[in-house]
Amino acid sequence: MDHGKAVYEAKQRDKASRKKSTTVQVKEMKYRPKIGRGDFDTKTRKVKQFLGEGNRVKITIMFRGREMQHPELGRKILDQVAESADDISKVEVYPKLDGRNMIMVLVPDREKQAAAAKVADESSTPVATEPVATEPVATINETVEAEVAAET
Image (cartoon, rainbow, N blue to C red):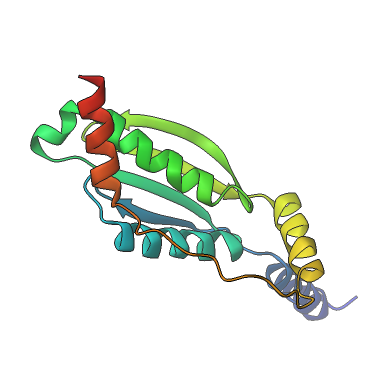
């Protein structure tokens, strides 16, 4: 066999294998303990989008100054993010304090995503529903501050 032909075929095999492989990126979303409801919803929606694309998501709560005295505020936000993305992800690294930051890592769960897609397909048939009255939603800060005040 010709050496040039063998080298060419090896390059073609390498190229085909690279084309089939996918790289998993780690995306990061940063939150603050005093985040508002709208910002929280927007960032959480983006986290779900990243997970839907198959990326890992590192969620960071950044503490400044006296906020370090209340790590439970950051833990509460991380729990809410994990709960809202629970239908498509699972927690790989549970919340832990790393200096002035609290970190958690979510990874996409293919089984949960397939089940959610199946439920979405089944529910795509139109069903008549009654309008539901909605109550104004308090910000995360107000609810957390009320709970901290109740504890003390």
